[in-house]
Image 1 (cartoon, helix red, strand yellow):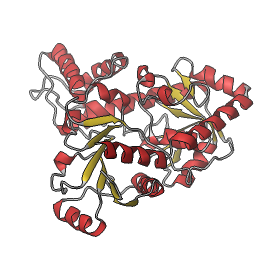
Image 2 (spheres, rainbow, N blue to C red):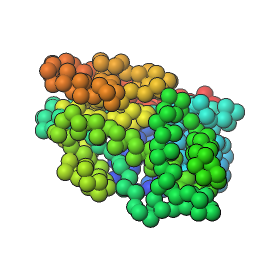
Image 3 (cartoon, rainbow, N blue to C red):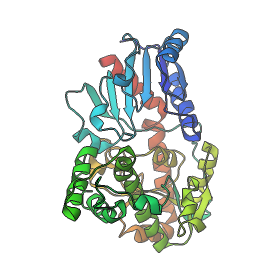
Image 4 (spheres, one colour):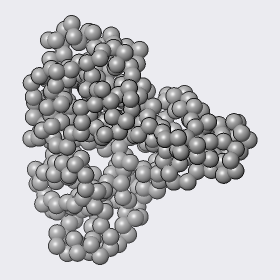
Length: 377
């Protein structure tokens, strides 16, 4: 299939998606096709108008499969990039000519008869994230989302439908299931089954979850646990820490003193990454900001996981201690001390990372991958 025009649709209009859309569209244009895009998932009438105006041969959408856009003309190829389930099971994302999965461990749970699919990770923009010299202001920086702390009302929610157990009473079992299950990644549905079994063990009744509670169990608890473990460990090693992201960080009393605000533009992110001797990632799959940090020559410290060596895992794309520095919660302080004592080594890692990104991991490289995959279908 020959692709001359591509339209990219991201879920909504936010600072992050606005910049990302610009970078992805630029990547497709550099790959030699006409590219357009919007910050919305269009409905039938708007999509018909869009196709009439832009005449795309390919629609590339984040988090919407063709099954949810059946009104898209059949002669237009559809690519779905699954980055967030938004409470839906992974099996929901079918029907597209190509389905890309953001999480490297998701490949184990995706239906193997659901059409062409593979891992597909983010790139970075070598124009907006140019290599930037270190201007150290803090030892450690972390940019990312953390949900608000649980409110009393949220903790008091009934999780059984009969008043037998509250969410707050079940929460320790949910966190324990996440910790013990890290070495064997699970699908959303299988994890909910584990939580329901814990609920039965605690009170004799299975879990009864609406969409909000389902998301809190499978998404919000995960982010709470990953982010608090990471930042607490960093703060035990140094008090020179800068946290960036939504205002939610300031609502956690122990993190508020380290909160530096929201980063809305790539130039702000670039300055923040260059101001930290090390930028942390919690190791739940290569993220957009991981690529951006390395692309601009920042030093990435990555929390190790069992899936790092999966296809699409960070160790399958980059070399530990050459392009990034792996750590565990037990070794983070040691890694920071080693890098502080050997700044020349840290600088080599920064430069190696930036070179690897420019060679293989820009949005132009990703656009070529998409065009190649669709051409082979």
